[in-house]
Length: 264
Ligand SMILES: [Zn+2]
Image (cartoon, rainbow, N blue to C red; front, side, top):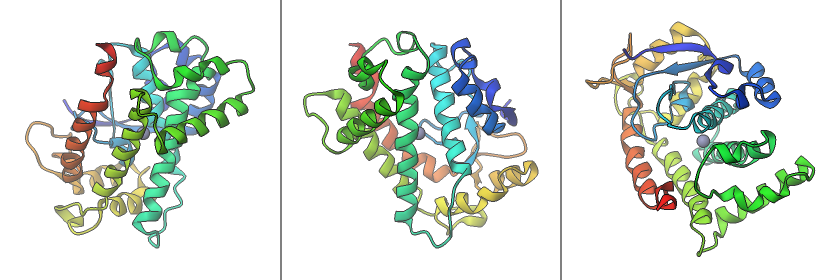
């Protein structure tokens, strides 16, 4: 049965490496509780943006990749909770804010985590990943490594090596993120916020997101009824128009820049 529940952030991790990591423990202490759903959201639909994170237990064959996913979503939620959003923000202000968060979260979960949890890299992806080229920096001061990786990542965003699919992937993700921001500028399309840009509906709700009944009522307001994936007490997919539009972008990107080709 599909439902929404509140869980302790720490309880979401499955592997001892993440559970025993002082970094993860310290971070989870600041997070406390998160909203979770076991409803199947459309591929790429970013439920954590509106605190309706997908439960992914059993989705990944590799529990370390599951924990990377959880850490990525939790870091996002943590950053969103600090949001300084003001209705005076333009869409451009908001898109810069969102893309900055994505950049920093990816620096942590795609790169720095391998320096923070020793031995993790051998346990995650069997194919090469972008950060592999920089793992030789291990042993240098963490501030130096972070600065270097951030600089190299920015280079890949702006000027990816045309010969290297791993650099091209980083660039493709940046483009995908920008398309996501454009899709969230569009109105919700139905319900009480039909005419309002979807990102403003989320940001204006954010100060009240922690209140259980209020959040559930709001999720119902932003959900479009659809058979097959009802929430308990709700009926449908939150921000269904955004979900539908982004799913196409997500799947197209995956087709050309997903990891499958690296396993050939
Ligand atoms: Zn992200």
